[in-house]
Length: 292
Image (cartoon, rainbow, N blue to C red; front, top):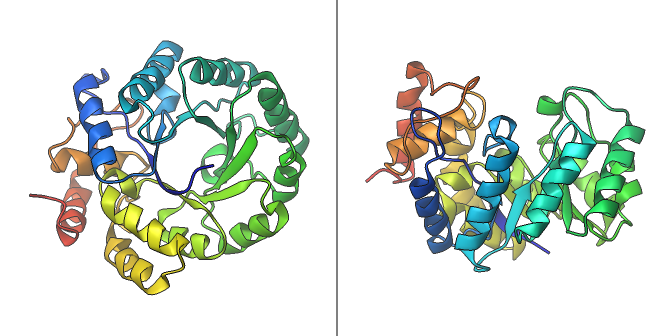
């Protein structure tokens, strides 16, 4: 249903932590102008963990309304409470999102059966396309391929974002799922290789600051133009690495601040990028001609 570079959009904030709606509007147009293939709003990069339920729903509506069907909008609606995840997913559906991205329940460490029952109930309750999201470095539980395959025949489970960076896992998922469920990389550093193995795109942090380059890299990779994809990816490698010098989205938000696109606001418990890393972010931006 979706392919290419799907930006995991940051949520711009003022220095007091309030959402900066003007900057958000500008970011949306920035991505559409630079051919981002879809916007993922209110996910990990969007600081969903510190948004109130009202803010979460409001920001989904804001993005959907402004995008106005020019590109798909995928709403992050995962939670470690199944009830809350259903509520957020219903909100996304009511506000016109094209799909939802549901991170595995975090902190409470469900079993594989718990993961299966959680996602099955959400899919059966809310009739909207849903993308699973495996990121065990944040959730403390690995969404195993066999469990994903159990969910693959539920008609509105349409994809999985696999963020381990494990290319063997990507290959295994593509083999197990076939054309039933699309596989997306959630790791910029290995996204190109993931596409070569059968993934349909990248739900990307790097695309926040380099949307056109990420679109072009994914486009060439999907079309089998491996040399062109590799040339772009090589130039982006410094960004893929340095945008994770601290926990995402700290470096990405600071990079956008350096680019003059957003204020430096971020919500506790996250804090602005440590001074010792700021020069490295500027170097990475300059290496890709992203600072005017």
